[in-house]
Amino acid sequence: MEKELLQFMKEKTQELVQSPTCCAELKEVAATWLEAVGTENEAAETEKYMNELKADIMPIDQLIGFAGSETGEEYFGQDAAQNIKAHAEEIKANGSCYCDCPACAAAEAILKKLAAL
Image 1 (cartoon, helix red, strand yellow):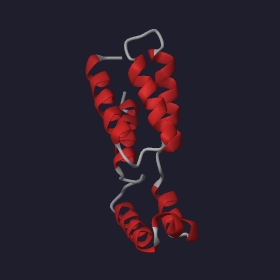
Image 2 (image 1 turned 60 degrees about the horizontal axis):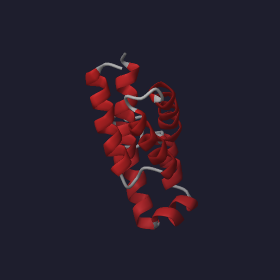
Image 3 (image 1 turned 30 degrees about the vertical axis):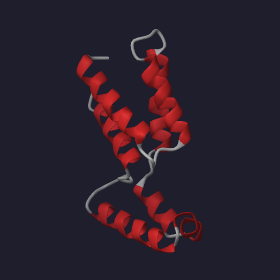
């Protein structure tokens, strides 16, 4: 992996790991990837990491559906769920495909960078 891309990924991965909105599974895979950088395990861990990023990034329609559901209201609280749903609908109207929480924003940045290669 080229040095500039690797540095970008490491920075975004640190943001991801430190994000309170990142799920435990992704934090673990991301931390393992960081430890594997520069080792013989880097390629295998990169593949696992990319697969986990793709699995865990929240599509905007899924967020809207969850926040607008009874389960979403129970999880977030009624007011927060309504605010999250309204925000998600707004960013969708502006072209967003994914949730813009810190974890999803970092995941999207990494995936976009890799897709551009």
